Each structure stands twice: as structure tokens, then as C-alpha cells.
Image 1: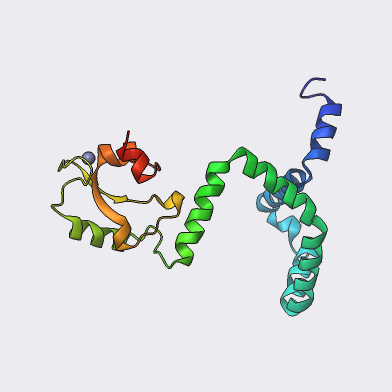
Image 2: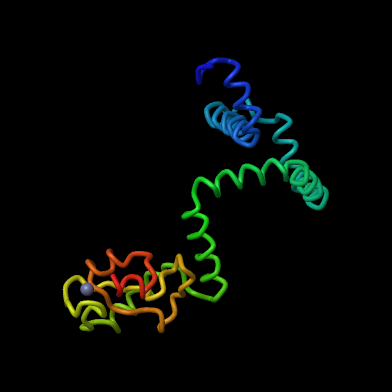
Length: 172
Ligand SMILES: [Zn+2]
């Protein structure tokens, strides 16, 4: 069975219901964007208006639909997690850091850190070249953006340390 045979496509669609629904929705959105007139004063517009005036009932329907597709979405989520464990880990770490109240890539704060680190040599090799802010415990490993987790590191050390735990990096 080749990958573009109708049987294969049918099986693929059966195995990926979420992707199929997403594709259908995207097609609808594309058509709507291309020809907005055709979608004026249609059921969609009336439904949008109805939603605005019946928020509580609309929410109920949304919950119902969520429950209906819950299993499918979970399966799709598991497939994604198996394919991209690193992305899931990074996302979890970001959420943990944000719960701890860590500012997420705030450029103003980063400038403040750099000003305070100014003149500090690389904590790992003592170099003064291209100093950057290093997270001692990397964010993806649950480290925070707090002061005690930040230090100066040269670009080279920062890059080779990357997401390695500190001890692993130092013992190499
Ligand atoms: Zn260095």
C-alpha cells in the first residue's frame, strides 16, 4: 500500500481525527478570509451573535464538546509528547518557573542583570569575552530566573554548558 493510495489516506484520517478536524477548520477559515462576503449574514454570524447573548449556554456547549473529544485529544497529545519529549520538558519547566514568579524573558530585567554582572568574568573559565547571563540550573531543568540562579558566563562556556546540569558540565 503506497502512502498516497486512497486506502492509506482513509486509514490515516481514521488514526488522526484531531488533525482532520483542524485541517477542516483551517480550510473553512481560509475560505472565509478569501471571500468574507459569502460568510456575511450566514449561520456563522448569527451563531456569533447568539454566543454573545448566551454566554453561559455557549460555555456549557463548549464543555460538552470538550468532553466528547477529550479522548481523541488526549491520544493526539500523547503522540505529540512521545515525538517531542524535549519540548514538553521545556514547557513544563517554563510553567514551573512562571509559577515561582519568575519573569519570563523580560528584556528590561535582563538589562538590569547585565548591568550588575558588568565586569564580572566568566564563572567557569575566567574569560571576559562576550559575557552573557547564565542560568546555573538551566530553566529546562527547573531553575528559576532568581538572582541566586544567575551568573556571568562567556558565550563559549554558556553554549557548551547549554542545558547540562552544572556538575555534569564541570566534570567533563
Ligand atoms: Zn567561559
